Image (cartoon, rainbow, N blue to C red; front, side, top):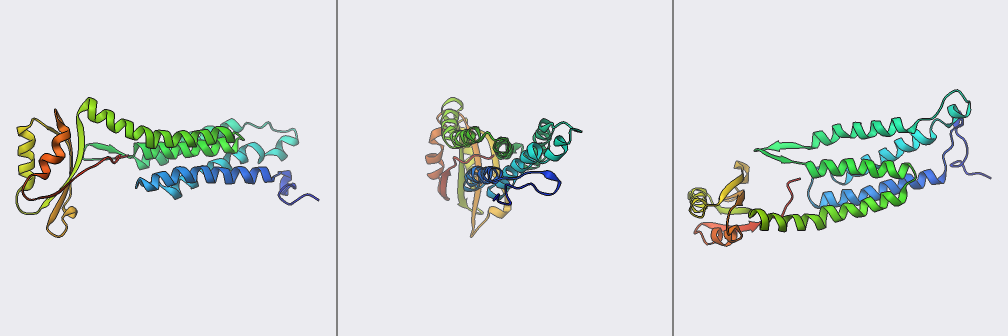
Length: 239
């Protein structure tokens, strides 16, 4: 006796255990991507990635099998490529909403790309290409984690750039002193992120991106300034 999952539904369409497994596989694989984004503290994390990936798989399965009753009647031909193309273009609007520009710097590119990637993984699973979907998720961790470390090292060595968070006592003109030292050492300030909300218990936190020769010494140089509480080297990816 066939299970209801393998039996035709209203309209003659068929759903089976294989389709349910593919949906769950899309959910599980994109959960891994979402966990990585959540751990990194990004806006589109666990919930967004899994919803995008699972929904994309469902759309692909609907495109492949949802119109079997129409095709069987001989009045229509099935074209699943049209639905797949609409997923690719439609997910771009979600990615565009994630990307923002703040103080001249672009944020969210990697996270937007991860959402697009989750859609691709869901589409691949829905199309029955489970092995390729698993491979892409594995490669995601190579690019997001391993390549990030390599990128940070190359940036520091080739471009001479560091990103540091400086915590200093409020009301002592410490930022002016930090900028004076940067001028002395010919370090270029390429990014400064300061906000009044960062003042906490009389301490101010600013994030600075600096470039120049011997820039690796910046953390120690700033830490030696009287009134500076701490200098933290940031390896965070703004995306």
